[in-house]
Length: 322
Image (cartoon, rainbow, N blue to C red):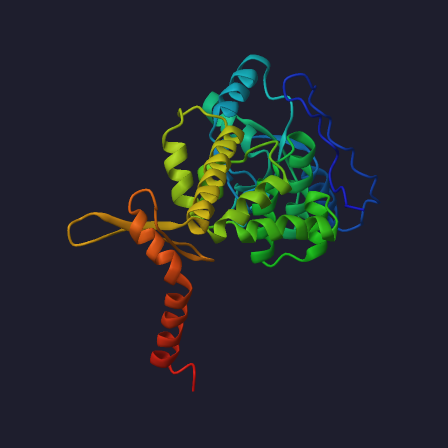
């Protein structure tokens, strides 16, 4: 079971009241001044503070494809009207009076648009715990799309995070993590960034699109398709348009590959003698009797002998008969 290392935040920024910080456990006051200072630091670390946005550095792995989008504008307007209802979480930086964000990147971006300080829970967490908090909070607040989770998993693995940390961060089983990674590894570099998060598009659909990469240049196809769409086309619709184009192109290429090539054989005067049709399986010579009935009759009487003669000639020339 995934570890939940923070209090579950309310899902709706607009309607939820600001949560009160978890009261610290009662600690025995140590006799030394140093111990007292440590206890005070622990209490402070679990409090909500008002922090200037420019004191907070973007940190950690990116778990979303789109941050600066229209939803940031809507969130900024909500915060302008009602105030920030849900705090973000940060951890102290190695630099004095600076912090590294754990979660709440959208809220931080919105408050930077609105102006003023940002309400933040400050906690001293290591890299593993920060990653788990980031993943769990995003899953609870606004479920990332399948492909966003896949990219996040890829980045976590490439950054050296252990499998159990990755599973806890997204609440997935080992098989679930594997299912995401298999798909993302099949997709060419840059394709996901062109399409976007595509909420509602699941593993099977992304997997089907990835399968086209063996025959089709997915990135260039996606560029052509998306360039023809309106700028405000939702990401999921971009996916469907790209998938449809790739599917049609794959069928066309297959038909062409399986199709036949037919040429007209003409005499010196330019008159049609017959047609030669070649495909992957057969070679066919056709004579239209209505166009040249006498020649047609002559070929009919001699076709079998002529074919055997050509075959013997091929064996002699190729050495297949030796």
